[in-house]
Structure formats: C-alpha cells, structure tokens
Image (cartoon, rainbow, N blue to C red; front, side, top):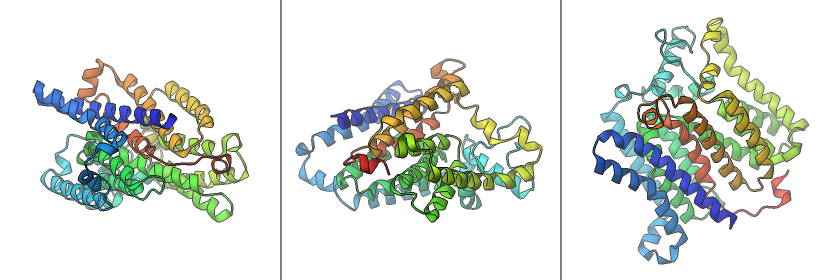
Length: 385
C-alpha cells in the first residue's frame, strides 16, 4: 500500500516538473491553443503511463510485447542519439542563449591562459559555479566544442542504470525509460546543453555504490573515499546526499572508525581538485569562487533547515527505493527555496524570464524515477551492515 502511494506521489511530481518546463517554453509561442494543449499533453504523460502500468491486463498483447522487449531500450538510445547529433549539427551550442556550456568554456579558456579559472571574461558577468572535478569530466567535450554530448551521456547513463537493475522487471524498466524520454525537462537537458541531470546521475551511481559495498578492508575504504571526494567536487548539493546515504545505511552508528577514515580520504580527494585551482588563482579565489555562487541559489537559513530535516527523516527510511524517493523530495524542497529566493517580480514572470532557473528541478528526476517499481525485501540485516 505504501509503495502504491509512493508511486502516485512520484508520478505527480514528475508531471509537475513537466508542467513547469512546458509552461516556461511552450508559453513563448504566444498561441493560446498550442500552449494549453502542449502543457496538458506533456504534463499528463507520466500519469497515463502509470494508469497503463496499473491496468496491464487490458493492454493489447502486441503493445505489451513492445513494452516488454529487451531491444526497446537500444532502439530508444539509438533514436535519441541520432536526434541529438542532428540537432547539435543544425543548432550548435554557440547559438544558445544559455550560459552553462559557456561556463565550461570559460573555466578551461582561463586555465589554458594561466588565469584563475573562476574569473569572469568581463567584469560583472557570470563566473563558473560548479566545483573543479565537474570541469574535468566536461574536458573531453570542451575539446570537441560540443557540451551537448555530455548532457546526452548523462541521460544514457541513467537509462543503462535503469535497464540493468535487477530489482525490477524488464517491463518496469522500459516504462521508466519511456517516462524519462517523454519529459520536456530531459529533452531540455540535452538540447539546452545543461548538466544538472548528469550531476544527479553521478550522485546516484555513488549512492548505489555506497549502499552495496561493505567497508570491510582498507582497499574498499580508500576507493569509496576517493570516489566520494570526486563526486563532492562537482556541485555543493552532492554533499547533502552523500551524508544522507551514510546516515541511511548506518543510522545512528554512521560515525564510526571506518566511515571517518572514508571521510578523510573523501576530503583529501576533494582538496586535491581544489589546490591547483587555488594556487593558480591566489587572491582572486577569494572574490571569484564556486562556493559563493552555490550559496546564492538558495537562502542559507532555508537550506540549513532542509538539511537538518532530511538528516532526521532519513533515519526512518528502511528501503533503498524509499531512500531514492526521499532524496528526490529533498531536491524538490531545495528547488522550492530557489524559487522563493529568486521570485523578485512575480512567480510567473520569474519562471518565464529566467530569474528562476527551472533546470535545477531536474536534479530530482533521476532519484524519483529510480525509486519506481523496485522489488525489494527489507530486513534489519540488509539495511544495516
């Protein structure tokens, strides 16, 4: 029963995210009928998929065979890749009125010019917000001058993670992938060369890794610590979710010798990504650094309250699917804080005219979708080890 309501809430949240993106971009057509019909269709698609899932017996056999096909995911990845390549060719990133790809270019252009990577091109313009390892991940795509392939890689990485999951049926995995690819937020992620979704997928991979391993020897502790530190060096919100997975797994015993050593290696890995940047920037790093950028996204007091509530709430989470769902809810709460903070001229105007960056809500999508349709048997032994 609990799982059923969890699924319903998840689908409603995905529909609301779809609504937000649809409203922001379709409303710019200035055609009332297109705007209303487009928003309605894109918003209710996840609900339609859930209705289909809950009434599988009435689905025609031929359609069920398609939905259950082991090859469906490979067809979808192929279509998505071809579509993306065509779009990137027709509409290169320099034509976009967005600055995420430009921040990656700015970081590496500055670095190769032996300038502080976080300094603006011109005084008063934006500076890069993510942490250093994020830019290391993006470096190959900077070289080929197309960040869109990085965004595409994030979506494909989530598709493969879902498809290869052993906790759900092939039909369930395919349904999640169809919900994913029907979301305007995900399409925007690729076409707009955004990397918020990718960042959440990287965090999700780490959460799965931490959940499955046991810190039983120094080799595993070191690997876990270094992996954790590198993910910490992407965006600041990763720190909360990493803390949550350790509290979820170990409950009130999350501070112990093994986790402390793991944390020390994580801090070391994080520091190793920052030290070269700070050495190059010197005094400029005080004025231009990603920490100040990250802390302008959400009111600090609000973020602290959400963090404390999340850390308290995760103590009562018993299943990993519920933990993923819970993490998605925390993402939504952080985005609500972002909306409140940047709502300077009325909510609708702020959404449509970019004061509120709706792309940040897409960080919740991987966690919410991965929580769906998992077949888990929970015991005290499997939850705490």
